[in-house]
Length: 493
Image (tube, rainbow, N blue to C red; front, side):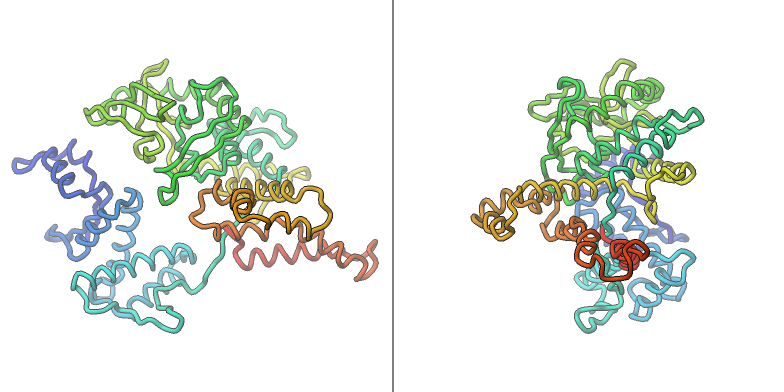
């Protein structure tokens, strides 16, 4: 079996056939609403479509999923189909034993077993496929039984909580300045540093921390959204994210002055070199780009030419794929409208940002010395900036709301006086709205990280065990225990 994915632009560019032209194929795809990235499964001998996999792929296309998601889903089903082929079966003849064998192969037996979260994604997709097969009459029933408490062989065996990992101030500065920025541990310039675009990477971390945005949100932000070239230098910015937000849930994002200044430093010192080097290559790709001719900051709209047609878009409604190819006429020629760019002149993809942080992590470990703050057990992630933002904001709002009243009962009575006041001023709900969580329940997981549990235990059990001058304090014991418990349970998100 061979797996392909739909790419309308490639079809229009390269397809040459006496029966059907590339433009005809593009029009057909538009007529049937087939999205780019839709998986197509063909027999490796006859090159004929394999059903019901192709019909399922078309059904996924109608779900309006991102191109990368469709490709990922296509690979998962191709992997399961390959597993079935190795057992002399196809996807429709799958039995419960086949599903269990596939789960064990993926989570236990392969060279690098996948974790619970990855299997949860695969199992959910397999369950969706079997549901599709039953609905369309390909199967009379799903191949798996529902066991006690609604569990089945597709369900993940381990339910993990949110993997919350946050940074202290010292840790963040070390990550940003030494790992990403290429400085020495004592803040001196490291002239041996051979990294690429340190100002860009530092600005990315500052923007992520200062706004609490997810990586795909801050990495695809546009210059007009931050007010660069529109507002006075160093001015805070506020804009709406929607198309790049999780589930497309719109929310207002506030970028503080410090984050904007960090981005402006990169735009002033480093970005011109990147854009100048890529202007010629972008000019050759003119027809493939969205060339913006007008930006209206007040309405939040951009006007330009895409695929030879004049188009108008709301910036908040522009998906990452469109933001990536959005350019405008700059000082050196065509220049990306996105804030962050790489050597290609367009914004870096997720894999590029992953390489940047991996390189930073290796550098932080190599440069670690006695003055280095304690490094986390696991390699840090860009999402840790979002967790740090959430915890710092939540702790600050709680302190602000509590004030200096010593009577906890009085504070609680003041907090619970009015429902509207509770909704408007509750720190948890404020942070939930800022993060764009679908439900405040998701934000609840941060609560266990806001209390200073170690110091509370120190006060409660001071002097209980041994001589304080000779024995380990309870705070040290508790800190070690909490670290072990966190590693055993997987932490939070």
